[in-house]
Length: 410
Ligand SMILES: Cc1ncc(COP(=O)(O)O)c(C=O)c1O
Image 1 (cartoon, protein in one colour):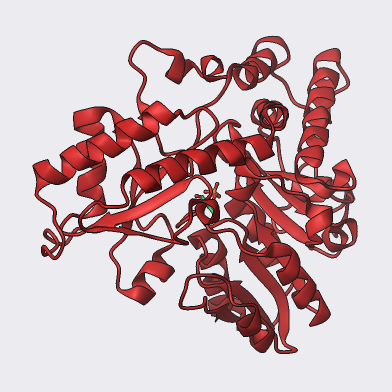
Image 2 (cartoon, helix red, strand yellow):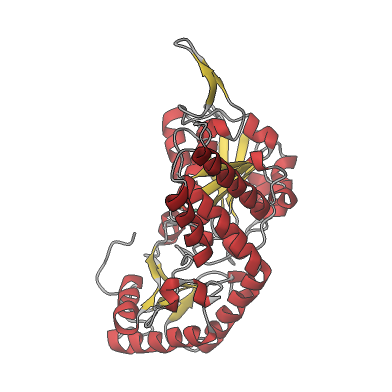
C-alpha cells in the first residue's frame, strides 16, 4: 500500500519514522477531500439546496465511518473535533466539575490530558491527582485502587503512550474506576491508529482520538461518548448549529452530537477523516500492529549491543508497539534527529513529545523517537539502524560521555 502515499511513492522518499506524531495521507483520503472541495464545497445541515444536501450526506457518512472505527453503538455518540486535545477539553469543561471533585490520570500523559486539569484546578478548585507507574514502567493497578477516593469523578487515561508505545490495561482500569463510581475517559490518540479500539468492549464513558494520527487530514479528530454520558455534558462552545431555537432570553440546545459542534465545520476534513478510518480498517489494525512489532523487534535486536543506548518503555518490542524511543549517552535527542535528517533523510521526533511531566519528574531531558506505521519496511528499519551508528560515530556520543550543552526540548 506504500504506493497509496504520494510522499512515499516519490523518487527520493524520506525514511519516515515520525508516525506517532503524524502519519502520511493516502490517496483515498486525498480524493475524499478533493471531492468535497471540487464538487460541493458548501455548508451542511442548514441550506436547502442540492449542494448542501450532498455535504450533509457525506458528513454524516463520515460520522458512521468513525463510529465503526471506534466501536460506538450509534453514530450520534461521535462528536467531530479538531483533535484529541479538543475532545478532552469538551469533557473537561462539560462535566461541570466543582471544587473538591478530583480528576485522576496516569503519570505518562500527553499535555492534552494534563494541562486541561491544571487550568480547571486553577479556575474552579477541582483537584488533579496522578497514579504513579510501577518502577518497571508498567501501569500499577494497585496504586489506581488506592487513588480512587470517593471524590474522584473522572479517571482520564492514555491508552497507548506516545512516550514509549506502552499500552495501559484500559479494560481493567475502566472496570476498577467504574466500581469506584468514577467516569472513565480514554485518550486513544495513539492506540486508535495502530490497534483495534472498541469503545463498547473497553466500556469507557468517553474516548478521544485524532484522525490525523490515523492518516486523516490534519486538524481532525473525534470525541466518543456513551449516549448517557454525552447527554449529561454541557456544551462549552455554543453558537450556530448547536440550538433548535433561541430568543434574547435563552435557547434550546439540540441533542448530542450537534450541541457540541458549534459553527460551520471542517466538512472536507471530516469527510477525509471518514475515508481514513475506512482505509486503516481496510488494511486491518491487527495486521498493522503485528507489522510494527516485527519491525520494532528487528530494530531492537539489531541495536541491542549499541554502546550507550538506553530504551524507554518495556524491554520487549511487543510492549512498545511501533515506538522505539531512546537515548544515546553523550548526545541529546535533537542532535540525533537533526543529524539523521540531514545525513540520511530519516525523519524522527526528538524532545519531550509533549509528555513533559513524565520527563521532568525523572530529571530526563527527553528522548529521540522513531515510530513505525503500516508502510514502513524492514529495509527502512535497517537503514535507520545503520544511520544511527554513523550518527553516533560522527557526533561522538559514547557511554558515560557528558551530555552536550543544555538545549530546550519541546
Ligand atoms: C497519546 C497522545 N495523546 C494526545 C495527543 C494529542 O493529540 P492532538 O495534538 O491531535 O490533540 C497525542 C499527540 O501526539 C498523543 O500522542
